[in-house]
Length: 199
Image (cartoon, rainbow, N blue to C red; front, side, top):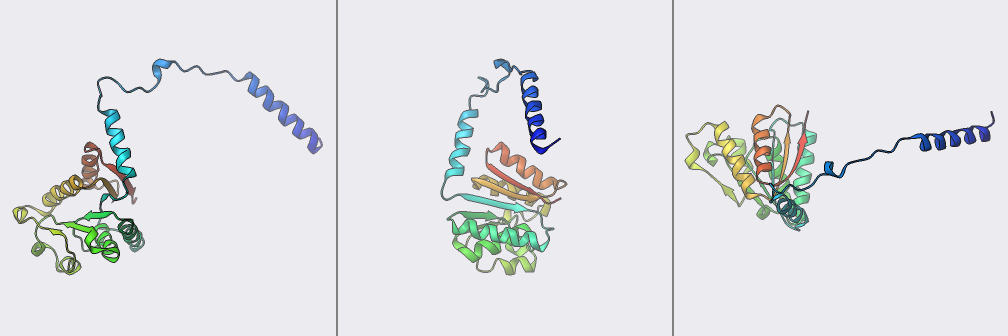
């Protein structure tokens, strides 16, 4: 067969397939509709769209402490860029990983646009975290959680951070139970959520 004959054969096969393909009927009853028993669904969607369109938002960045340096650099760059666009970054203390990178990035752009909420007090943080927090103007401490375990205080802290934000950006692995709980809490609060899985 010549190239022209092959093209004619292919075109005629396509025409035959199109005419022999059955059509699919979709009943209107199966279409997605807003149920009358969920009256707030439209309002919640409108609220989320309005949040996305805001020019300046409060964006929470939380996540794993165990990050390779390349991921930390990416988070630092993201944090810097978000602050330069006029957003406020809300995070917690951390000697390494997500929170530390978010703090470094925001401090480069504008320290006034950074809010650090600690699970307990500055004095209970490791010395390298205390050093990193030098010069951060907006730090929230919780002496009332001084007797809690760090894990319990961190869970409460994540919820406080999420309550204050419009949008959550979370870096986690599939096994990070505390961070998964934080994401679920943000979903229940109808926050705009971006999740990056590291595994």
